[in-house]
Amino acid sequence: MKLKKIVDKIFLDNEEKKFIELNRYKNNRNLLFNGYIFLEITNNHFSLVHNTFLINDKKFKNKKFIGLWTPSMQRDKGFINFLKFIVKFFILSLEKKKWKKIYNSIGVTEIISLNDDFKTNFFKQKNDFVKKTLKIKKKKDYLNIKFKKILVGELMYDFYLRYFKKHQMNFDDKYEIEKISNYVQCYYKNLDHLMLKYKKKNIDRYIPWQACYIQCGVPIRFFLNRGVKVIGKAQEIFSHKYTKKNYLQSFYFEDLKKDFNKLKYKKDKIKKGLKSLKNRFKGIINTEINYLAFSPFDKKKQKKIKEDINIVIFLPDFVDSPHAFGGKFFFPDFYDWINETLIYLENFNNLKVAIKPHPNARYASRIFEEKLKKKYRNFLWLDIDISNHSIFEKKPIIAISPRGSVLFEIAYHNIVPIAIGRNYCMAYPFVYTAYNKKQYFKFLNDGFQNKLKLPKKNKNLIAECYYMNFINKPEYFETISSKIDLKKYRMASKTEDQNLSMLRKFNNGFYEKKIHFHNYKKKIN
Image 1 (cartoon, rainbow, N blue to C red):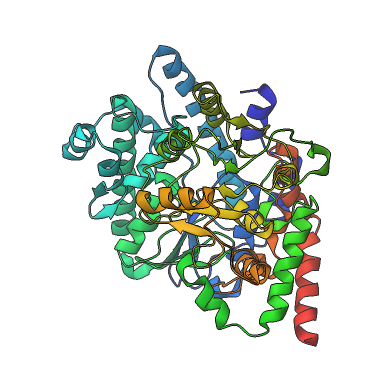
Image 2 (image 1 turned 30 degrees about the vertical axis):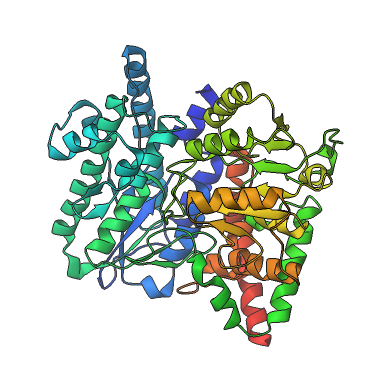
């Protein structure tokens, strides 16, 4: 880590100090007790601003908030990694202390760590669960692992990819598999202790920030299994109601078309969807993609591609939770998907295949992409920052993306999109969604032969689906964050200075003005 990054992690910034002073005397919560709310605490300012609004919401006036600290550590093998872990553990301990001070100022007086990082990394549990996971040799079997009747396999798999920087599960990695099994048990044990300590009848709800990986997913599934309400941040909304049927942070895509048909003023909503999409094509980073470091339609990156393109493949980030959307993902991970796809395409010498990396791919994913380039030299590997305009100008016959939001862009430009498993567009006919390998490869084969067609009034359907995924906000209850669309103030850059910009706006009363404007607008309407 760079020294400045460490300093930013463990010491209070001026804006953080200002935030504490502004809130110190506003949040005396010694009120009439009416139940506990468990709140996921993460080390970012976006969630801090949102949680501050929640804590001050009238509906939670007499609730006592207890923070659950979810940031988790992992330790790699070897003596050098042992020393790194000790240093990182010390830094994380100081970072937690800082965030505890920040959250104390808004009334969260108690913060509990769900993963005892030191204990789980140095005291191994060779129990039946660990032995069972170590015996597994197939990805499919690993994905179906349950602990105490809770499905945890895909959470463990995604944690392995992201936090141990891998592109697929390697069952010879006994060390990592054992660690992850211990983490799951530790989370469960600490959550079980909370239920006993605070008693279910006194627990109002759990409010998560997201649902991926074991540190976020296990608490959600645990509380649902114990009959506790879980309502919190999800795909595009701030008060998603999680259920035993839908415990993922994505929308229930299967019903989006039906849900749109129930709405009023459909033409206006389609216009909004079209406007947002067109802004995206102009290179504007709008709310739904403001996590990206740069626009995929940046005109400065619009270079001429000399080669012909019949098929274009838009790669995902290979270490970014392939199972986050759930469903029967018939390729166990993106590694198997891309290898089987490219091996299949190699059989067709007359096809011109181009491959575009994901604009936000992490370092570990890019390393894997370099290996793919060496293995599959016959394909055209595009630059990560080349404009999608340059690609679409070549008018490929089909384009493939497992589940990315690029599917909207592909269809809008009259190119046939093919996806696999649950995805944003699965309820609509402008994307060919495959649900098994046979269907997937048939789609590819039919696509080469121009047998796949897009529906009429394609653009209206795309705008409708886009609206339902990114503009429509089916909040379970209205929050201040949803009123002012807090997400649009999130910065794409990961630098600490810009990360703090959301907090700076809070301290300067920026959001307060937005709230007053929203209330005034609502009143006159």
